[in-house]
Length: 516
Image (cartoon, rainbow, N blue to C red; front, top):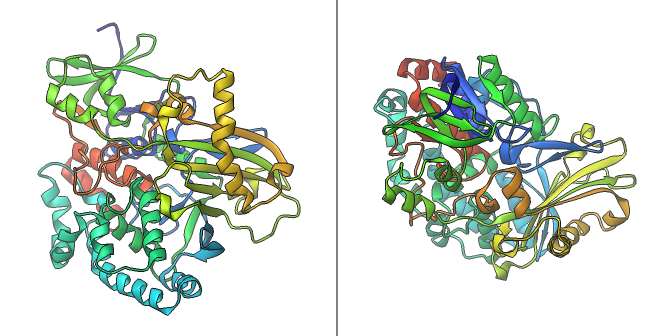
């Protein structure tokens, strides 16, 4: 096995948000915890980077539920448990460039009804109100048990059990949460725009259409976005500030983050995971557990050949995957742009093509309209991306230094430029910095199998596997374990893995500390 260099109670593979949430809570619970990150920047798909004075998000840019407590957002629950502060700007408006036209809309139920009235008339508003009525008990059921209370052992009787009366009150609604959202939508909504809009929200949440997105995910979204007084959040200092805050929480309780610490293999003795071997030969032994924040496919690659049951390997390796991403990171001259330019915009080119169709949906984030520190004075930092709809096979096998790769980058990024030009028509004339990311960029820098956004497990067809594995001493967290893929889902996955290892009394103490 090689020379034993050091040890800890828990070793986390990867510093994505799920891994950092798990690690921070484990450290809070008193476990000696080490996070091994292959990159030289923490955060995984949520990391941020600086280039020529511009500060860019690499991934998530749309946040909610982070600016108040108590919050139903699992990520905020982790931040509260770690007793760390994440100041946020708040806003409520985002821009839409849809086949119906170009307009700004706001979060909140009443505000969206105003948009519907202008676009579709009173009948559409009535349908939306009916859907809200149907979703009301589902919203309550979806947040009846906070993710912070969940664990995967008998201790859950003591931690989650106290919320059972609330859950039982919503039991009829709970039964509806397990199926696809389309079943609920189809019973209420006939208006084509509302159906398209809901399908779009499903895709942004799960990478899947309404027929594949669980009703629970959409119920959580309705609880977050379509309620009185709701605001969206953006961390002061950019999304990288969120990652930095999680690292601060980890270190506050004695946890360690090791960057440029690439895990080559999970070490196994007998039938138990006992540690990891890093590139270069260093070994770290785990007294309690190894927790992988790598994807389901990449975790399998880390296990010694033949160490896992073949049936388990076959099932996990055949997990369906979402497509990958294209990215534009741009620095532009902002002189003369509207002062009320929205921070976020969404572009849909063709409803009939379907929201999951390649290059059909484009997201635009201009966070420097909220936080001027993210760009040089008089400039904007812009992130444009196709969210989980770029086929990896178009890129497979290409040499990143080849002319063919450069041509394909120019070709496949054009749709993002055109989407952005709907918001800033002369953006190419304003350009100061331009960076293009591809599925191969995702694969390389994020250590992601085929650059995938995550599993495409359709509601009703299968379940996310959760934190546990058939291998003692090995747990998992991240987007391969909990439905939703986005930040709330991965934060919940990290909490559940950490809670499962924690003594019940420590878990209950944490719940009291965050107000439950």
